[in-house]
Image (cartoon, rainbow, N blue to C red; front, side):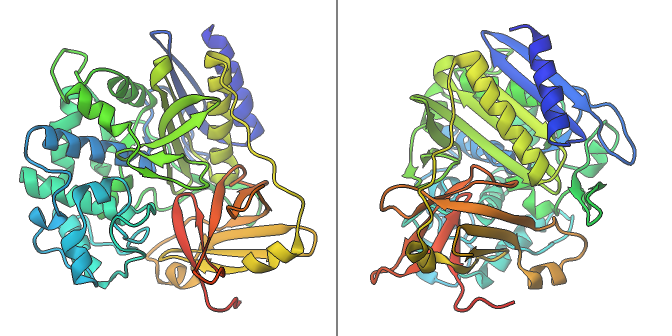
Length: 462
């Protein structure tokens, strides 16, 4: 495909969704193609280019998991070993769980840990050690190994394993294990490294309906293993090519055995009713689209969104980076990924259609659902269902600095069948699927959205 076609689509889609600056990369038919549009910041605008750094958010988890896999290949980590073999000081509220949780449980989100710990432990080299100590205060959402629920806390704990095994800080270990050998020269964790290069800032819509620079630029250091990497679209295509290859760097150095890369792409636990995937591999979301297996991961930061999707069968990858909140950036990324799958591979990704509104079914699920950080309110007006997603007020009030705005109310529809599946049909979360969980009596007690469990609150209050 001529690169102008990609560039034209990317520019038009960025304008359509009002994203200040975007970077897109495609690996197809043995060639790299890039398309960039817009600016790094509405306040201090610099042109986005293929080396502009974006915060990757949770795409960072793919690096942490790969580093663990390299340590495993070297015989320094056993994926089936209990985490306490490497972090003997680990304490959880449930002693049996602390003894039982394995390294693999962290990597495929089955450790039973909640989404994240909302605590800034500083920028010192002990940031991860301090976060691990805080896990003693965090309630488990399920016994280890019993179910998948996406967990930032689990990946921060995995990052601490990297530190303990290598004797290095997490950031230095990643540079030694991956960035240096793979030639990822535009990938950094430290603000001091980022600020001397061209980088994108996030943007969110304010009460005036205009985009404003999002602050803080990224979260604290202890979040680095799950969400802290800043990188360019060129480095992300190089990263995708490594995961499509046989485990060697471009210079020929063996980084991982081919079978280890293959194992990361094999299902380890099924995902139910999720638009993100049908299963977790080792970190990766695995999803069949039009009969083709895709391997991918998305990421969100404050006003920034990233997406990396690989099609091993087609030796294909697409990377999208955007610097606006969910109504803009998330929608842009989804539109570009779907267009690229269709244009390059002839694979069409369509959302399922919800069933007509049923007030009897709706009455079972309306209410408030919460996890450690977030709140979902699901309501019915007798004609349809709506969903509001936002940070819990007490979390926002206790925050030291700004937090991303809540996602505006959107429409939600139930899906056919008896699996209590649903899909968001409007707004920034459009296309996101999830499901409701029932107890032994059949009462709805939880909802999964974006791979995260939200438990039903006892009473809907304002």
